[in-house]
Length: 503
Image (cartoon, rainbow, N blue to C red; front, side, top):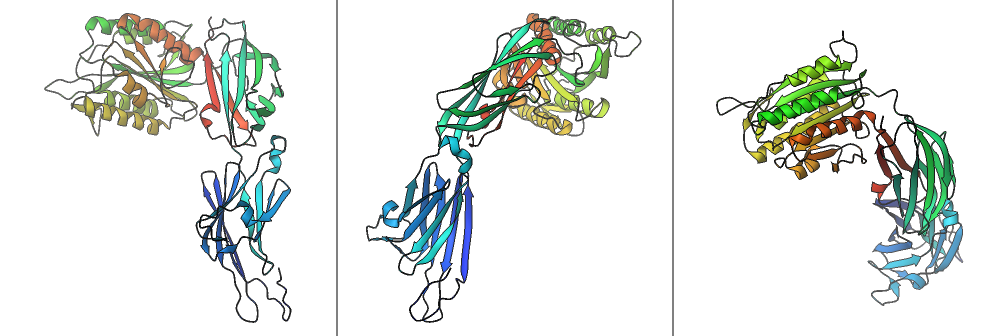
């Protein structure tokens, strides 16, 4: 740009700087402009920081010379230019007729939901009317915010094979910078075990092939809903799963209750309606609870990783493995929970058919609280009381996640807590995974649960339900995949429900 003068030509502008400061959703810009000519020095130096807060453009004077109130400002938003002078939008705290350091200029605007794609940035230019020169100019990124959430419902969580069920997905806009959310897309791909029949949306279109529900704009107070009808056929091909049952065999469990646990686990393995024999499950059983005043508590492998089949000549024949479970003697010592967790993880990783593509599941069965601290270098521990025992168990859980490279959308660490002894809130918040954990049943939230069973008499039903959930359930997953607005609350942008077909 050139500055005109009556008796001399104006030199080129010799410097300009623009800095965008980004803090959360706040975008800032800093400008320096130095003007000079060939005669006596004439320059304006000012530092202005710009940002977007909601539906306000804020320009703050943060250094340099004061600006006159008649400084012209041009603000362009979504192709529309708004012009005026500083005086129109300035909060003149000093009331001295100038834009000084620390004072802010505020310009309010509104988003047009039907044209959200045009709201990419705000272009700002300021011109000194005295010299007819640009003081600063540049863009500020626009990031409109609007909170949306997904709700998911199924009319029958335990359908029979062959039944039709309805899956209802609801998207709600709760508000934000805009009166709605723009160009929203939701993904729900019908999983194996279900067959797509039909869909009925209140708006937009659902494509069964891609799983994409193109909704368009969703206004506050006007939720978008799609009902998808499917037929339940059950899972024919399962993902390979490494399952480690980590059993508490400490002395707090009576011999009769220990036998109830073994009998319940044996019968569950022999129940083909809940435990598959198709070679898709590798079973490992670890017990912890050894030791006394004269020897260190420890954990041991009771059943090394073995693939369960229905072939009588295989080592993993379900009748043989279940009989081996029934023959496990109780250790009857302290509760070195951390040792059991570490040993279970190492068995899956070092001895079993480990692959990051396989599902890894660890299930901790306990009637008490961890009270031993793990001794590095093996699977023994020292009695240290509940505080250090729990910390040691938490460290072991972290060790298992790292060792197995467990993935939140695939793997899990769950717990069956029996009786009044276990610290269920601690198991729920610090042991099960993924977090946040929850109390089951039902198992509709997926992985990372604690099932608190009243006594060992109920263990058989609990273990059957557990296996049915792990091996027979079908995951219904819905997620927000696209929107022209930013969602500040992503917790409800991904929702899952599990259904368990009944044979």
